Image 1 (cartoon, each protein chain N blue to C red):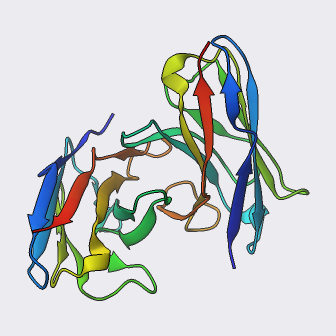
Image 2: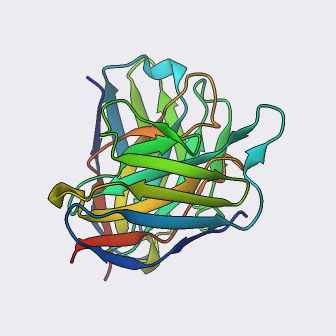
Amino acid sequence: EVQLLESGGGLVQPGGSLRLSCAASGFTFSSYAMSWVRQAPGKGLEWVSSIRSSGNSTYYADSVKGRFTISRDNSRHTLYLQMSSLRAEDTAVYFCAKTKAPATIQAPIDYWGQGTLVTVSS
Amino acid sequence: DIVMTQSPDSLAVSLGERATINCKSSRTVLYSSNNKNYVAWYQQKPGQPPKLLIYWASTRESGVPDRFSGSGSGTDFALTISSLQAEDVAVYYCQQYYSTPLITFGQGTRLEIK
């Protein structure tokens, strides 16, 4: 059974930093591209960042480029999102997400974690 | 960026009746090389993550009831629930993965029971 378990969310002041983690199990983690998608309270879904299966290519939404860094440790089956210079508008539930097809980033998301809430407020 | 626009924003349908949600992309999401439309549909219930229902615009994900179907090509797509059940109350999102990694979602359609 595929499981994605996020952690690391919490309350942080504007300008602060936070690192999210996503522990994956139930599939061959190193074969799949992974993404972070966020959802502000009461709002829709917004893609944040993606990383290819090998970790050698990373991609970011314009809204987070230069502030967030996605990475993965295939030996630990874990995905990360390092967030810095946080703003109030980054407040959201952050979902870890698995791409459906192996070895490609151009595929739908077939599994989502339960999400971790990040609140940016003074 | 490809913009996905859903209609309506909310929808109320009686139990057992048909529900249709539309999604329009700002440019084609049909790859001519493989004749596939890079569109997916998700269902999200309160307090839960989204769940994949449909991909390639019309392929039902494993385990999804056959009352859910997807249709359309190019820039215009639809999700249809043939006979609405109480457990189908949710927010539904369309998504394009044509211009990956920059995937985009529609704004969501809230489906309720009339």
